[in-house]
Amino acid sequence: MIYFFLGSVFNIIIFGYLTNRGYRNNKILESGSDQYKMKNKKIVLSVATVGSFLTPFMVSSLNIALPDIQAEYAADAVLLSWVVTSFLLANAILLVPIGKVADIYGHIRIYRLGIIIFTLVSFASMFAPTIQFLLFLRVLQGIGCSMIFTTGIPILTSAFSPQERGKVLGFNVSAVYIGLSLGPFLGGIFTHAFGWRSIFLIVALIGIIDCFLVFSLLQPEHTKINNKKIDIIGSIIYALTLFAIVYGSSLLPQVIGIILMLCGIPGFILFVKRQLTVSNPVFEIRLFRNNRVFAFSNTAALINYAATNAVTFLLSLYLQYIKGLTPQQAGTILIIQPIIMAVLSPYTGRLSDRLEPAKLSSLGMFFSALGLFILTFLGGNTSNVFIYCALVVLGLGFSFFSAPNTNAIMSSVEKSNYGLASATVATMRVLGQMMSMAVATVIISLLIGKNQITPEYYPLFLKSIHISFMIFTVLCAVGIFFSYSRGKVHLENN
Image (tube, rainbow, N blue to C red; front, side, top):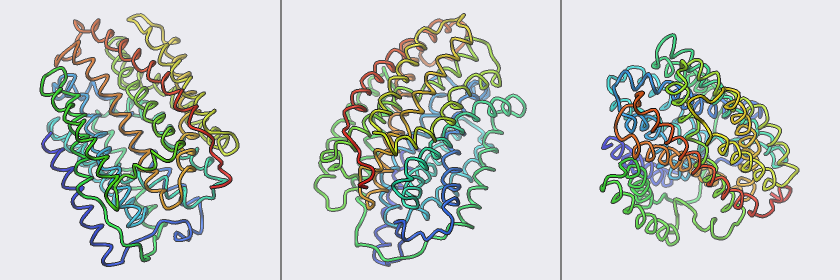
């Protein structure tokens, strides 16, 4: 994990230096809608849509290939989980600092850099000789992804009017779910036919397409900016705190894991105090204190992703180990949930332009809790129809929650804070995803240890699944309160 730590801190320092230097040179881009001067909004939507498709496609397709990765590298269950967690952690650490930098330099410029990094590293991942080197490349992928996800929503929000916001955000969310849909299906096919490394080739080719779109069609202009700087020290404290908590959770129940997680508590307190006192905070804590809609919507997002992200990870292993399915067969089953999400999200997003997002998101959180509860009854002989029903309910939950909740967050802030709001919701998503993976990883670690998932451990693995889904069900039940209690969003006044 030393590669992860050094790489993340190095990138924070470099971003901060370039940002502070950029203020003095006055060669920075603004990201307001009147600065973009796009001739065709469809171009903006296309670029953001392809970028939103890439990451979930890679994550979901790689989930289906985890057993093959484990077999090739002879990795234990905990180390295997870091193929997912290392990417998410690198993403989370840099989302907030990069969101600040994007508000300074311009969202399109940072998006360009992110898609280049993501594409090149995806290509390099095809040739990873060891799982340790693969984890290092996954960290770099997370860095590129943080640039893409932080800037995609502000680009859309700035280019489209408030009356169209829910609709285009619905399309953006739909792209995410299409990626989740095609990932297990195509990932299973390519893993079965060409091996798991071919997944990275697909991702790299899609990245090349998005590079072409953003460099040939989107031309940000240079304008002067206000004299602000990024809080480098605060960013480093933030990175160290997240690293201690997430890496510590992966070491549980060892003593060092407990110590690292406890160290994250004073780090978090120190970060909050600094952000309340510095003139240019990297994370605007005051928005959480003074804006109930913003605070509760982000809390609901954190809880929702914490409760649902590990579903694909656990079901992928369950279907292949317990049910004995091939990667292609498992991917075909897992495609059900994201297909429903992809189809319904544009409609729920458009609906949130007229109805209160709190009602729609709360309904979505309820369906998510119900779907997770159904999965607590998985057994060695559970029928596929039972799994289909659970995935359908979970798909409904995601559809009604995600786009309306994102619409509420982006509509609760001024245009000058679009980058910050986007970085915040992205951070809640990634933190939730890491929490979800941490819960699953800790439970597997406690019951199975660092052993590979072999037939003798199947009963313990099933027990891990039951405990994980019970915890996730309770989380979603709590999330309903925050989702419904956020207050009203008057979209017409934004």
